[in-house]
Image (cartoon, rainbow, N blue to C red; front, side):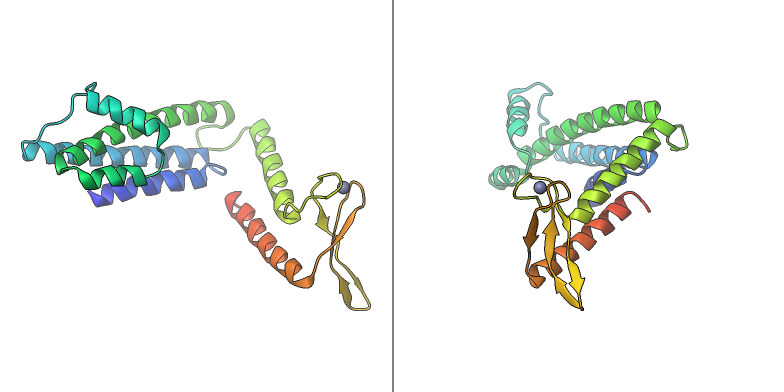
Length: 211
Ligand SMILES: [Zn+2]
């Protein structure tokens, strides 16, 4: 049961991580997540049945209340707070209701992914030229953003570039605006931190885009 719950969550996370590079992988992982969560749902239903506990009516007032509550509560804390005060029958029913909701959301996610996939790629996950060009553009934009680190020009708001210069081995640390030429001095320590952060971001972009 715990394994199914972990697998469900993990496959959604991995599917999302794969989404920028491979639609086929993402669809496969979301399908695995859906199957795992279905398994968990069945386990909760078995739990109620084998202990002669009552399963909530599909459109009963408890489920209606929970669905409305779920609209405004995306994090786990309020559910855990409720669960701590209720018996196992209520907790299992809450889990079933939320898992059904999740199953429906993943179903819609899959439908959207498959539609998108049909429009942009072939069955082996190779992208059509237009989609490939769009992906390359996204990658280049992400790379540029990561490399510039997003320091904004105080005058025009443009992203500034690292304008550090070296004269006789002495570094002059600064950011420079490519648009209006404004220069902002930075101290070496800030610069070192920024450069480290920038390297980290560039690595992340390379990893996400698989190159
Ligand atoms: Zn500027």
